[in-house]
Amino acid sequence: MREIKIGIIGFGTVGAGVASCLLRNGDVIAKRTGIKPVLAKIADIDIERDRGVAVPREILTTDARQLMNEVDVVVELIGGTSIAKDFILEALRIGKPVVTANKALLALHGEELFAAAEKSKADIYYEASVAGGIPIIKALRESFIGNRINYIYGIMNGTCNYILTRMMREGVDFAPVLADAQRLGYAEANPSLDIDGHDTAHKTAILASLAYGEWFGVKPIYVEGIRDISLTDLKYADELGYHIKLLGVIKQLNDDVQLRVHPTLVPEDSLMAGITDVFNGVLVNGDTVGDTLFYGRGAGRDATASAVVADLMDVALNLKFGSHRRVPAFRIGRQFRRLMPMEDISTRYYLRLQVEDKPGVIARIATILGQRNISISSIVQREGQSADNVTLIILTHTAKERDISGAIAEIEASAGIRTKVKRIRIEDM
Image (cartoon, rainbow, N blue to C red; front, side, top):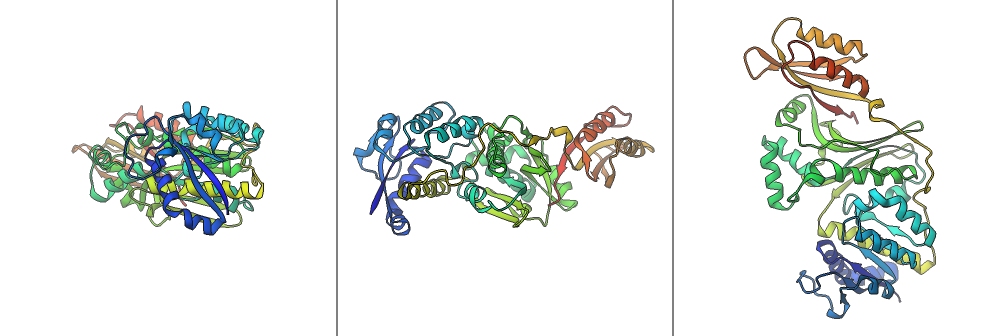
């Protein structure tokens, strides 16, 4: 039976999970593929610490470059965007295929990495970079090859989904739920990457590039996190038949592509509303297949390890049959679609504000919206924080972002307006 020698750079949580899976299920993998996976080398700066998985002492090393020369495939699991990038480029230069879970590196430097892979005729596999154990990368690269992708909606950050789920379910404010998430290990000590939307943006960049076959990167993506989502908004959204989710939104309209990350009202009976707690979900709509939902654990040692091992077996089969880049993911360096500026997008909106409880205030708001071609779908009035204030919750029909922004600025400058206008976008799916 043919063997494939595997080298892992980075023996942290995920690295230990990959090693454990290979050692535990190597015989199963061999029976299914006809290739025996051999864990040949593991490189880490600390090879003394107990990881909870028994590996032969002789395969441990602190020299990652030595590892590259002794294996058939390199697995990069150290994270970060500097040293990891150097290791991947070096592995590709010597013709070694690479498997990585490094979403930030791919989102920021993917074009350079994939150009290097194309030049060396080596492959980069990265299933674990988006949504953990959910096989969304392979699906977009191969399974949807006969489809034009109309849109993708992604709940791709378990930390944010956990926080929003608990806030709504238990009626608890943002800060204590975030503290609980940190205590339980669902959120980092510095949670900014997650709750400010940047982690979701990295994943959105990768999925968009796969969906449309050209590299977009993370810089053009509009990003808004969940720090400002209040319990009040979650309650009002629920009353109106919606849940609030942090969505990565990818849409193609003719030759224009929308890429955005922000809190979103989704209908309570939609597929995305049912994705709760730390789980992830990606909804893909293709012109032939229609809607398809991918659901599962988006993070964690074993979910991520499962995706890494699946990539390893794809590499092994490529090596066995002498193939590579069976389905090229991107047209490097060529741009065929226009990235739509955020101010040009059109969607529906939820607006919340407090106003003076006097005749004419609501009429003035309606006039401002109407002057900018913004039609009101519904308006709800609730008692305000004081006797002379009321809270207004307005849902609009589809309108341009530019028009909504202008209307909000004008409303906030008007007499009788007590608070800033809270805006949350709506996606009716």
